[in-house]
Amino acid sequence: MNHSTIPIKVTIVGTGYVGLVTGACLAELGHQVTCLDVDRKKIARLKRGLMPIYEPGLAVLVKKNLKAKRLFFTTDYPKAIRGSLIIMIAVGTPARRDGLADLSYVFQAAKSIARALVDYAVIVDKSTVPVGTAQKVKRIIGQYYQGRFDVVSCPEFLREGSAIKDFMHPDRIVIGGETKKAINLLLDVFKPIRALRLVTDLASAELIKYASNAFLATKISFINEISNICDHVSADVKEVAYGMGLDNRISPSFLKAGIGYGGSCFPKDVSALHQMAGRNGYEFKLLKSVIQVNNLQRQVALRKAKNLLGSLKNKKIGVMGLAFKKNTDDIRESAAIDLIKLLQKAGSVVSAFDPMASLNAKKRLQGVEIARSPYSLAKGQDLLIIATEWPEFRELDWKRIKGLMRSPQLVDGRNLLDQNTMRKLGYKYLGIGR
Ligand code: UGA
Image (cartoon, rainbow, N blue to C red; front, top):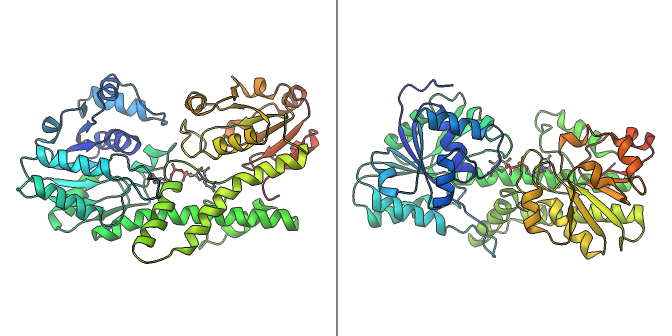
């Protein structure tokens, strides 16, 4: 795809998830993109087309655009910034201990950009940053650079696992800015993408990102609460969610009950918005409950395991899935990892399998045997728990798995399997809210 009419020189600071996907996709649209990072090793590997993360389609896109000389990698600020009209900040904003976002990388990037600036440029906040950050970035740049520049907030809405598709076919592009010149330049950058544009002020653009993630997380915690009621009244949460989702105003998305949300975004952003509201004199009561419900949801799987096994002590339990969701090797804030720790605390002997995240999980887990396949995981287990919604778990030979287990018992923490089929096969099966 290359429908861009005017190629623009863009620098992207930070080659994490957002930076790398944005860089590769903008190059694919025809722009001249330099991805900049202070991590020399990472940049050296990227120059050879080696990805630091797994994201479907990303490696192919990076290699293709490297070859076409539209995508470059560097650690050299002046070299990258010189001649760039658009400079995007896409560095990490990890959660601090108090729940707020740590902005030190953003401010450091702003300072380094300012020192390297020689001409007018638009500095774009791509990282998820609290309301007011764009103004702070503006002040920092103004301290080190006396020429003209603009700051724009352009939050991203990419999902891991479908990031390239989400970039190329977004529901909307949000651009928050203060000058026509900067906004028009951003509109030019995204020109080849067909999507609704929302042009707004800086603070509103910043808040749209947090409000969107917090709302989606609220939907998940809401359906998880409904699933807990379902357990009490013998209703099936899948039926309830389907019935709710048929109402266009509700929509079926993000109504899958399970052991809770994880990842590098929802937990961090929900707590950051909660804290941000508090700091501005408003107690966001709803979000406090969203967080609480999500934390408690891990315990639901534990309770179900206890229902089946009696005591968890010394029981052999196999956890299927370690990633925070399907199609990724990312284990940050993964519900599966939390669950494993709870099981270990209860005295269970835990092993696990994941199609993609085993290597990452090994570094984080102690005393957990990581199996090479779901079948080797199943051998001799008292119970299996599905913790990540990998679609391939549906396609497994569950008859064979039954024969390998010590007792065929299953807690389906993501309601992935058909409960009637599993029961017919002879499993003692418990889902979430069904
Ligand atoms: C999320 C948002 O969906 C993106 O729009 C946003 O750009 C991104 O955060 C970000 O801020 O960077 P992501 O973290 O990749 O994307 O993952 P999601 O697909 O949203 O899933 C998040 C978690 O919710 C996963 O643990 C998933 O298992 C869980 N989930 C999702 C449910 O438990 N139920 C659902 O119905 C949907």
